[in-house]
Image (cartoon, rainbow, N blue to C red):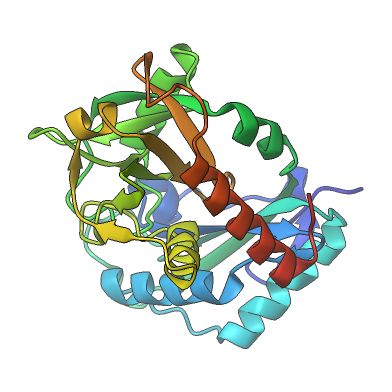
Length: 288
């Protein structure tokens, strides 16, 4: 299938897709992004992605006049044109092109790009059975990581550290020992059957997969506690897990090389994973 990209209203071959050298997303990371799962040709949790994008536009004062209906139509058009049943849709919205100056241009015109790439969600089934390892790194990010901007250098360095260590993810730990989240995932521990995760704040991204997981857990009458937890608590937890768009739910069985609980995926993670996959099937028809 052809690899196609969307750039400001036009679908073109990915190899020919370009942005202006003075795009503010390129020069200042003055841009937002979303990554949505495409499973069985259907967009997963699309409405929450749109809602988060709109909130973030308001937070950093980007005027994006395209309606949700129009954006949805263009996203689905690109997904269909690329022809992948299982894929990731990447959307990036910058303040636009202007002479390089830190302050906002007087009449900015937001610039939208989207790409689609094939993604194998089935690989997560095997990882779910074995669990994954994480390392911990100092949280060096700025103070508004709840906004999904493209300024991700600290995340890039953390993910590279994880890769070098043979781990799946790096958990960001604050100066006072609190686990915030992963480089591209939300983090959880389980203690005495309760699912514990950092509350929404400026310190973590309000993950779409996170919101879905907590809703499903509460609907199933499972105990959910939103509070900060320390690295020491994580190391003493019965279970740990992570979620993201690209990893709907994976048990964490090692932290910095030390086993979590029994060192194997636990029953709470297993029950949550079943709920998540059932929700994916309900929305998209994708089945394990």
